[in-house]
Image (cartoon, rainbow, N blue to C red; front, side, top):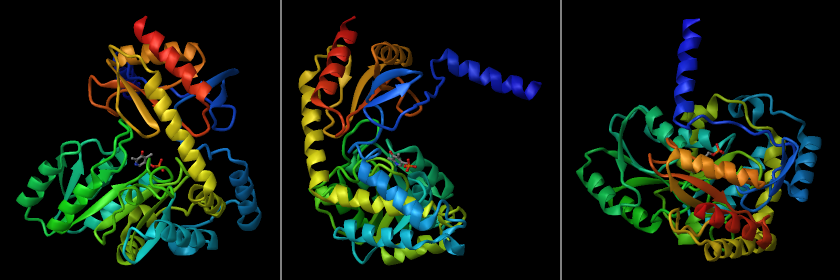
Length: 394
Ligand SMILES: *Cc1c(COP(=O)(O)O)cnc(C)c1O
């Protein structure tokens, strides 16, 4: 059939460019050591930065949540799906990050992807006088949210505060929205949030911060990028995701109560979808307790030790390790082919590292995306560093 032939030809084209993606099926819980196709592997590719995805207390809380609230929510939040579990979680989240916001409320979403679509469409939609200013390395969900907002989108270069300032100065828009990742997902570096916020306040612009990789990780209490930089402002709209460091799934937006009420009333990705199972929200209370307590602090300290060890252990000449201080530790190789060959060679040795290609990263900067977790040991990291070093020289 002609239609299928066209799709098949497209897939062949991806294969030719080493861009075809494949899925591996994991038989065991998310952890450093997993079983794939009957093989034991040491994995460095999850975003389970604190090692909470298979934490016994969180798994037990999930079971308790099921016993108390059942399996599904049955409806969207505005119909009958808004459970006490969701309400309690939102209060807890607002308290958790609220010191960095003004009159904070929080809203729980099924995924971070949806939360980002919701924020950008609800702050912008229907308003032709809106312009969105988007950082060039932003996550796909922010790019899609900006597109869905159906308004002018201007992209500013990575971490270039002066360029953003110039774009804002040149803009006549009455409603300006600046949006950035806090920790860049494929580079591991931090956005210059204090400088960005100062520029936004000067121009009367919102600053939407997507802290998918910072929530749980940054700041003394794990409260994320705003705590790390000690920022506080009514201009801030904070998005945290709960499937990475928090170990479960979903996301939240925290902001001034009027922003949150606007999302409840207007954000289609919030309104037209079934509420997440309440048991997830219930289990997330235990995640938050761990993140904010002594155990979370100890896990973050252990991870920082692994990051230092990783940098000390690498001996690279052709490939480039980015200077990241977060759990995201990319090794830039260059071509798609060489990157996938390196990932395959590591896999042969029982080491699972993700190879990242365009369009996720710019052309010519394909890379291994090593992610470290508090669940890794020093021996795990030493083993990977040795393998990467010898592979680079081969
Ligand atoms: C993972 C991620 C998201 C999406 O969050 P999900 O909960 O996985 O949908 C959004 N933004 C960034 C920067 C991310 O890394």
